[in-house]
Amino acid sequence: MSFYNQFQDSSNFLISFSKNPSMDFCVFAKGYTKAANLLTEHLLEKISFSDYEAYPVVFLYRQALELYLKGFLYQANFISLLKELDDLEIDQKKINNHNLISLVNEFERFCKKLFQCDRELQTFIKKIKQLSLEFQQIDPGSFSYRYPITKDGKASTEKNQLINLLSFSNNMQELLVDLESLELMLFEEIDLAKESYKKKDINPP
Image (tube, rainbow, N blue to C red; front, side, top):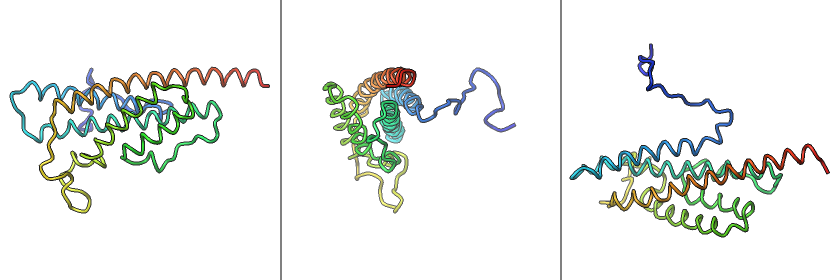
């Protein structure tokens, strides 16, 4: 039996069982968020910790943010399809990368069309963009806290790059809680769009 299935007990977990995996990005984001929160809590409870113990925290939070943004794009794209907005379509070049600013800008483009009257959402997107911009400065391509060097052999971060774990985690946790709420809002919009689409199909003009 394979090394990963020597036991069959309550520690089993599944993956790839959804009918529409493009709607599962935010589920993955929750996993990375919880892992980051647990590791952060563990490190902050210690009197001190080694620098390298915090590297995974940066990666986990960044991955969670990136996955949420990609999930929002697929959700927004689905809403636009249900509403038959032909001029709204995901730019795959902008979503198949690790550039947070590119992802935020693409999501903002969708929101300006789908939720143009939602000022609160527009303000929140600006907050996401500002944090993403600052994140890009310390980890532009999601490699800095996974590898010590880039693909061309250079250092993956600036020399002696300093991050305060408490400040970093507090801000990321606050943002990710808000992103989870945004996910729920988008799913509600999907349900409303589905109902409207069904009614249109049943009662054509």
